[in-house]
Amino acid sequence: MPTNKKESLQFGLIMCFGMVLVMTIYNFYLNGIIGEMTFLEGISDFLIGFVIAFGLDMLIVGPNAKKIALKLTVNTTKKIYTVLAISGCMVLGMAFFMSIYGLISTYIHNGFTSNSVAADYFAIFSKNLIMALPLQIIIMGPLVRYIFTKYIKSNRMNTEVYKNT
Image 1 (tube, rainbow, N blue to C red):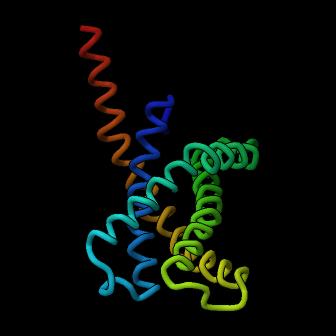
Image 2 (cartoon, one colour):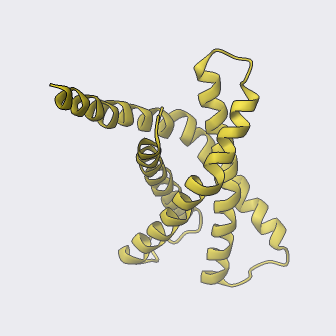
């Protein structure tokens, strides 16, 4: 979809915003803290998660997910397979790293609640993956691609036509 760095940045911002917003609310629900925290605490948790997720998306997960997905789909001409491979790799990478963030955040807020950090991590990772994969493939991916092509790409095309006249 994005064809240059600026478009990649815009696409990443929209995707990260949507995914982090939904996943933040989901994790607040799972941890039973929706009614316990103030609105400002919720916003600050969202913003911290968004900054971390966006950094991971742009610097680590995004580039590596695209490389892996393109290698996996090198012998196909169907764009849908490439899109699904990139989405799947992105979700796996982001769930992996954001679950570390979630574990650290949980330990900061609640302290150590069990004897196994690994068990806590895999519990968080599996819950995040179960939600993030369908969210990305069924809802957020198509929605963000629609928003991107309808508003960002069309604005770029209109601007280029306007400049050339």
